[in-house]
Image (cartoon, rainbow, N blue to C red):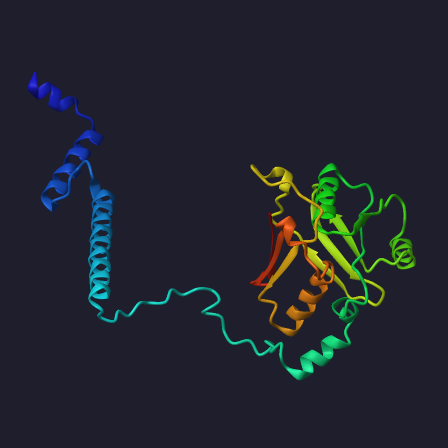
Length: 267
């Protein structure tokens, strides 16, 4: 009977037996295999590194307690590894100051005018576009919505100039009916800037978000240090009042990094 059962073994079963035998000779567990053995070694090395780091950390703390000077490594960041940019300007430079005294936004920073903004969109805006513009009206104090309908852009600009608006904000939508761009046109002499909108998250979509209040916010502009950056920063700042209402506890941050401007609204 034993001989008959051995004869009935398939060719594949015999090959598997031989393979397991070879693994036993090499010291490999048949259940684990080469891949499993490699993973075990990787995990063992990770454990050893973690253990070594813990020992070094304890030693540093002990040295600090004893008053022994400890050299700590400074972590590398995108900003610390950034190459020197020749376009960076000193805000105290006389030439930069003179240019900013006569640019298109000088009237705003001299308090000769008060920001008055006209917000409009492309024709037939979607529901999401309307929601975005509603929140934009609350973010920007002294802003007014202008229904585009069938008006041409030239007619919108003419209306804004005649009614004393200082800037026009035009929101565009993509084929998916979502906001995908924002034009900011400073009146009456320009400039006009286009911003592509990405990773848009509305306040109405956030869990536990605070209630938007139409008070004048405090503005924080980070890393607008190049000539172009300072110009864009001044255009953004010209949309807001120079006298924030601190009682409203509103802060709006524009952070310039990697050719992108991150927008955050806190309350």
